[in-house]
Image 1 (cartoon, rainbow, N blue to C red):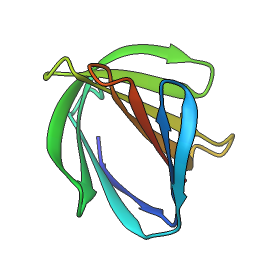
Image 2 (cartoon, rainbow, N blue to C red):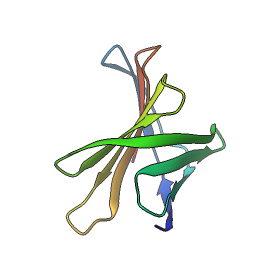
Image 3 (cartoon, rainbow, N blue to C red):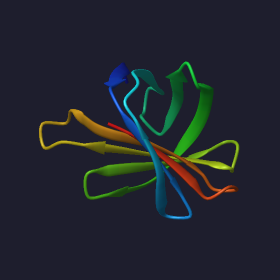
Length: 101
């Protein structure tokens, strides 16, 4: 599968399900998929080095991947035309979610 680049212009930070910040700063997200799409390397410049994750399930238009580092989970939501709508990085151990739009 291809490498997909997603340009985020803003992101929200949720802690324990409550929004604690909303920043309007650019982030460059790279999704580097394996040939069969069952694994993806997710990296976010400049804040997250590449993390390998394995496909867990598809929930409507959201693909859920669990990181090799079990403290990470990634959600990739797509629009009806298969363009990326958002990418979420969830730190399971700290109950933090960063949502990139």
